[in-house]
Amino acid sequence: MQIQPNAVVTLHYTLKDNEGTIIDQSDDGSFLYLHGAMNIIPGLENALTGKSAGDEISVKVSPEEGYGAKDPARIQEVPKEMFENAADIQPGMQFHAQGPDGNAVVVTVVEVKDDAVVIDGNHALAGMDLNFDVKVIDVREASEEEISHGHVHGPQGHDH
Ligand code: ZN
Image 1 (cartoon, rainbow, N blue to C red):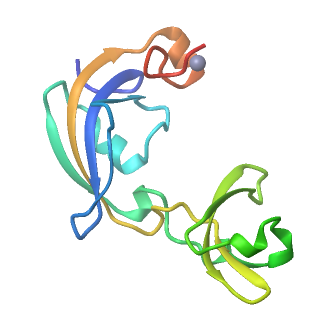
Image 2: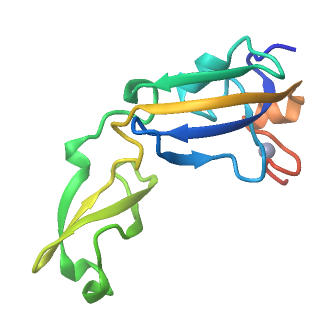
Image 3: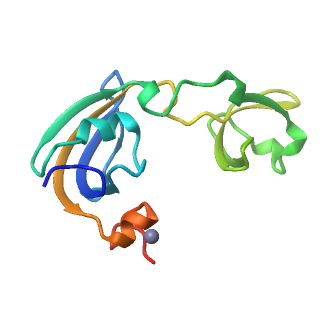
């Protein structure tokens, strides 16, 4: 079958930046998602619509169709005293924090000053072109339960 809304898709992918460095790839062979349920970024989902098992595609996804542009408002300076382990904080460290909408966000330390820490709450892939090489391994119809939950069940999906 072709990839369409409410299809469960199994694929292999490699994600590279514009310099060809691999940023991410499907680990133990495959990645599953529910098509049309916003499980993956729009640029990749759109490119996969209508494809079938065995198809291979290469697609460049712009930030607008990926993780968005880098938002300068998400880069903030916070007092060092807000961190329990202030002395150990290094650029590149990541913390879980609560975003403006109450959702959990991952923030990355970009700079450590004398009495403040600069953190970036943007997604690590925000503002980047994403170059995907994808091979479609399998396409099946989702169960009604998967459709109502909005995600894939089974060994590589949600277990409940
Ligand atoms: Zn579920």
